[in-house]
Every structure is written in structure tokens, then in C-alpha cells.
Image 1 (cartoon, rainbow, N blue to C red):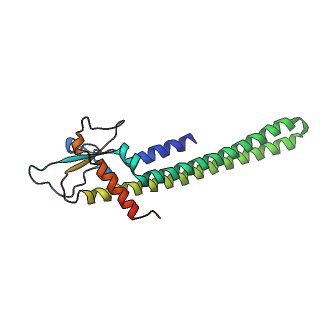
Image 2: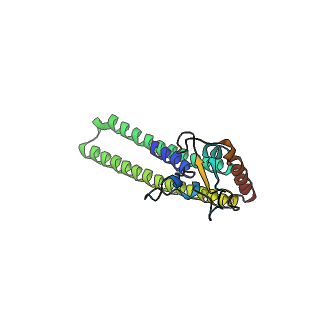
Length: 204
């Protein structure tokens, strides 16, 4: 299930996807930033008060307890799915090897019937794997959407006084920000606020 594992990693990271510097892109099409990491400002800042801040996504993911808990549950489900499919694949392989050992004792009709049975079981296993991947992807998508909504909602509340014109995201391995001043790092406040909100509103 290597493909599913890649989806998990990418899916979880996508929940806090990095925003592009919209103010540097003019009106070019296709350069709008995701809501979760774009400006948390609903109005125009007063003259001379243009301020920005950033959130370190690596730190947020490492210290946001709700994210860690839910990510752990998803990874557990992914492992269970892997084990289930691998177990059935091993059973099918054993059945195939047993058929090879008995091949000389079977009539042509019996051999062909056994081969058809194995092919049918293989197709069923492939369909089951496809269905499990689809179910898992749906769960992952819902998880990502929930995380993004939580971040969006918190940043709107966090920046309700409009003290920041933009709040950007930063990630050490993939970021459009070339320089960051720690004085504008609001990550600790965001982590604390989101953890407090999660503690006050337990997940269902």
C-alpha cells in the first residue's frame, strides 16, 4: 500500500498547505492562495499599519494535539488496511503454490477450474483493495477539510482586530518565504489557541 501511504502524508500536509505571496503576484490568474494559509483579514488596514505574520507549519503539526491525535488514528487505519490486504494476498499466493504442487495429479479440467477460481479470487482482492483505498481517501479528505476549517476559523478570530494584513505559512522544506523575522512568528499563539479550543470542544 505504498500509494495509500503517500496519500496520507500528502493529505495531512495539504491540510496546512503553504500560501503564495499574493501581494507579489498582481492579478495573474491561478495565483490565489488557499484560504487556510492566506490573509486572515476581512478589511483594508489603515494607512501605515500594514503588518504581516507567519505560522510555522512544521511546529504547528508537531504541537497541535488534535492534529497529532487524528493523524495517528488515520495511520492506524492505514496499517490495518495494509495488514488485511497483505494477509489475503499471502493466502492467495499459498493457494497458487499448492495448485502448482498438485498440478501433476489433476486432470486438465480440474486444473483449468482451479486456475479460474484463483483468477476470480485475485480479481476480488483487487476490487477490495480499490474499495478500501477509496474509503480511506474519503476519510482523509474529510480530515483535511476539517483541519483547514479549524485553522481558517481560528485565524479569523485571532486576527479579528485586523492587526495583520496577511498571515502566511512557512515550512522549512517548502516555502516561498526567503526571509522571516522571528518577531513576526505567531506560531506559539496559534498553537496555544488551537489547543485550547480543541480542549474546550472535544472531538466527537
